[in-house]
Each structure stands twice: as C-alpha cells, then as structure tokens.
Image (tube, rainbow, N blue to C red; front, top):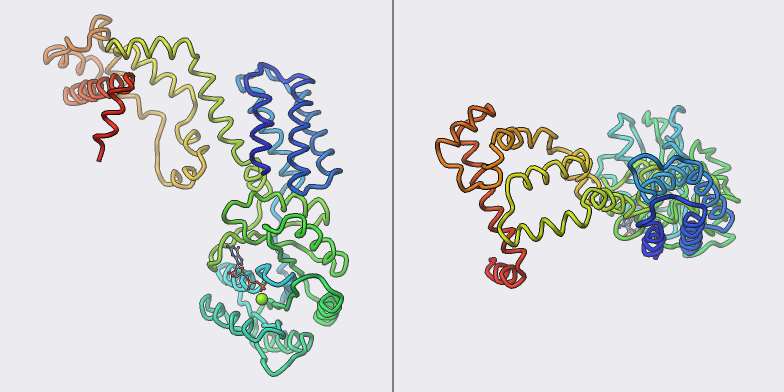
Length: 436
Ligand code: GDP
Ligand code: MG
C-alpha cells in the first residue's frame, strides 16, 4: 500500500547527511510511484514531486534537522496545498439554505445527512431533513430514525414516487416551519446510470440548492475518482464528503478527487455514529497520507541525540553496575534535548489525542537535576556512600527536602537494578516470565 511505499521512499533518505540532487531524485521517484498506485493521476503526481524537489534543493539544511525531517515537512506542506490549503466552510448565508446530497448507493448519503443535521444544530441552526430516496422505503425509515436520534425533524412522503415533488414539498414545509437549513437526501444507484443522472439533475434544476455535496466512499479507490468526475460533470457540485475514513484508509482518495474535480472536500466521515463527522482540514489529511511521517522524524530526532558509541559505552557501564549519577544526569539532558516532552509524545500515533489533557512540563526534571548538581564528584560516582548526613547536606545545598533526596536515591537504585537485569538477556527473560 501507499504507506509501505512511502516508508521505503523515506528509507532512501535515512542516514544521508545532506539533501542532494541524487537522493532527492531517488526519493521523489519512489514517492511518485506510491502516489500513482494510490490513484493519483500522473500529472498531479509529477507536478507534486517536481515542486517538492525544487523546494528541498533550494532549502538550507545547515539547521539541526535531518534531510528526512525537512523533506517530510515540505511534502506535508505541498500535499496540504494540493488539497486546497485551507478548510472550506459551507455557504449558509441564505435563509433557508438548501443543501442537496448526491452520490451512489452505500456511499453514506443518508448517514451524512443525519450527521450534518446534528453538526448544524450544534452550531445553532434549525435544520430540516428531507427523505428523497423514493426507491427504498427502508431509506425513509432510516432517515426518520436518525432524525429522532439527533433531534432534527424529517419531511417524508411514502406515497410519492417523485423525487422532485418530494424535495419541493420538503422545502415548502421547511419554509413554513422557519427551518433555516434544508438538507435533501436523495436516492443513489449501484453504479452510475443515465436515469440517476437525469433525476438528480432535475432535482437540482427545480430546487436550486446553494450547496450540492457529493458523498463518496473513500474505500473505493479509483472508482471514487471516476464517480466524482461523472457527478461533477453533470451536477457541478460545490463540495465533496469523504466517508469511511475510519479504519485503515489512508486518504489517498482525498488527493485524487481534489486533483481531478478541483472542488473542495468539506467533510469527512469517520464512523457510523452521528458524531463521527469532521470538517476537512487539508494539513491534517496531508499528515494522514504521509502517515508515519511524524514517527520517522521522531525516530530521527532520537537517533541524532544518541550516538551509537555513547550508547555502547553506557551498556558496558550498566553491565558492570557502574551506572552512576553522572550518567543519569547525562540521560536527562539527552531527553531534554529531544525537545518538549509533550511535542514528542504528540508525535506518537494515538498518543497525541491522549496527551491533550495531560501536562508534562519541561521543568519536570528541575528538582532531580538540582539534587544531582549538589552532589560531590565522589558522590556522583559512588551513589552508595550517600547516607543520612550527606543527604541532609545535599538537600540543603539544592533547596530540596531530605525526603526528596532519599526518594531519588531509592528510584535510582531501583532503576539500576532493572537496567542491570535487562542488560543480561537471561535475567531479562527470567524477569519477563515472572511478570503477572
Ligand atoms: P447511502 O446509501 O448513500 O444513503 O448510504 P448510508 O448512509 O445508508 O450508509 C451505508 C452504510 O455505510 C451504512 O451501514 C452506514 O452505517 C455506513 N457508513 C456511512 N458513513 C460511514 C463512515 O463514515 N464510516 C463507517 N465506518 N461507516 C459509514
Ligand atoms: Mg440513503
């Protein structure tokens, strides 16, 4: 899939000191291949990679970031620009605003109609939904159930088989009840056919909607792009809704559709529940398409700091139980050098969301650092000698409580034990077996 290909492309750049004509060209070739495989058309992929290449070669790599990081950033920005740059809002200034929903069967039109109604209601609007799928009686029931769920009224007429008439009746009903947004759900087909196109074109002509949202299943790949093109040629829609972006779908469809029809993607569906709707933000989707890009830079950032020789030396010390407070202090500095803790955690997929409400500040190590700094060189190298009188002196000198010093010494001792065990594979395996 696209992800594996991008990973491979990034590998080409890993371990390179500089962005050069050659390594960028190679990487871009891989990325172009990956984009083509993900249904992006050739012209778009070529333009994109050319632009990235030009920017990458033109930028100064004398800063501390690695070529891989820099390239990730450039690609992210370019991808976002390709998908429209900014989020595009619905045009809701008309009263009532009429929104027509179009797309194939199973794309998620009815689900989206409910989601959009809830979204608008929470923004203070007073929406009405119109059940315009005349072919499947169950579709009317489906919308009515959703209406009850989200607390938004639904106009339906199971007697009628005329989608245009129902849409017009619904709009009239909405006007009578002072609904300021009227969302018209429509029937789809299993695949594109003339009858469907004629019908939806007629609904458009008669209802004169302010927004026509084309709903498409993001999991359908190249088909999604073709369908978007046909619908856009006939309807000239105002925006795209990409559904089923939950799960593993990486969002390549977003890029292809945008590049083929040049209409903004306005929403994405991320689940079956009514709340699973997000406004589309190009930069977030870019990160999603690049997927593990953030992780790549996280790894690189860490690698940069821990040079291998240093690590090997540390290993040796740990094995001999010679790991001391100097080493410990150095480790803290390394961790701090890697950047703000929260930033760092945020780069790990899934953790970012979790960390939103947790506060880790960079001062977390302040107390520990001050205690270590108040130790004499002899004490740092021989932590075992730090008994009560030395603890009192260190506490006073560093402005901490004696309990804090004792706690740190205890933690340090525990840490040493664990480290020693892990540096010995047999002991580590034994420890794992003993875990609950
Ligand atoms: P319609 O035929 O275009 O009206 O499609 P529906 O709204 O009836 O949706 C078809 C199926 O897709 C239903 O089972 C929905 O629950 C499901 N569905 C719709 N949107 C999403 C989404 O964003 N994520 C997931 N996982 N399922 C969705
Ligand atoms: Mg439906």
